[in-house]
Amino acid sequence: MPDRIFSEDTFKNKNVIISGGAGDIGMEIATAFAKAGANKIALLDNDVEQLDKAINTLKNVGCDAIKIEVDLSDESSIENSVKELYSKADCWDILITTAGIFIGGPLTDYKADDWDTLMKINARSVFLLSRLIAKKMIELGHGKIIHIGSSSTYYGTPGSGVYAASKVVINQLTQTMAVEWGPHNIQVNAICPTVTETKFLKFVAGDALHEKLRENLKNKMPLKRLLKPCDIAPAVLFLAS
Ligand SMILES: NC(=O)c1ccc[n+]([C@@H]2O[C@H](COP(=O)([O-])OP(=O)(O)OC[C@H]3O[C@@H](n4cnc5c(N)ncnc54)[C@H](O)[C@@H]3O)[C@@H](O)[C@H]2O)c1
Image (tube, rainbow, N blue to C red; front, side, top):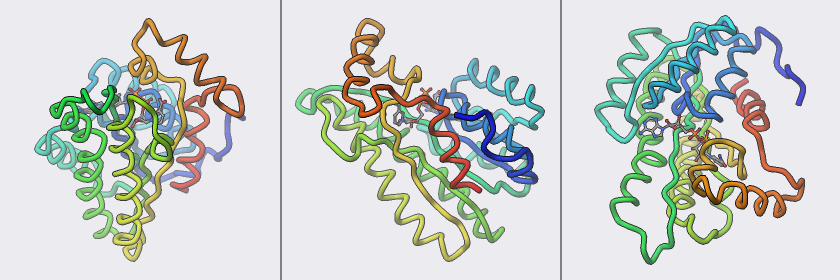
């Protein structure tokens, strides 16, 4: 992957919000936007330590990086984060939603509380955050929204059923958002990556199984390798451009 696909001013004057922005994929996307000249980048996350590191990295690229601590499982926290966003800038042009968690397990044993926890972050928060931002984008007359879904929506994988179901919600929401908000000049898309080398993968398998899982998954891929966050970021920037 070349270091630069987009010019240094592709996103000049554009303000970008990234939920889950302290995560591996979120951070890669944020850095790519910073290198492509984004004006302000707001990272929304609940991992304060990673958030501080991410903000410093963006500042080193010369970007006006804004840290927003939020618990995306909590509606009032999402509402407060949006108030904070619009206290920092009147216009946010681009929203990327990347926050997500994985709680695995066979469906017969899956706890209802785990269903709720996972759905709140992976699906409900995307709905709540996007519609608050979309209302503002509708007032402004433009916007781009890109969700990070998952290839797991396209097949069944033992132990991943509820995670995959949460990402199916993203696919459907994307389609409805696109047709409801498209007439207001807001383009909504989703990217559904396959398995990607991030700390998320470690979390899926646990430390002990991580290497074994990686090797198994790699062998199943036509390219015999897993994705890297840098494979995803250019696609996001393309859809936002
Ligand atoms: N890694 C993969 O194999 C893979 C594949 C396809 C899709 N995805 C999706 O990509 C997205 C990013 O994943 P990643 O691999 O970068 O994982 P990651 O764990 O590095 O990033 C996820 C981020 O979401 C944040 N987050 C989780 N719960 C939150 C909450 N309640 N409030 C605020 N922030 C919260 C985390 O702190 C973290 O920074 C996820 O939606 C994931 O489902 C990942």
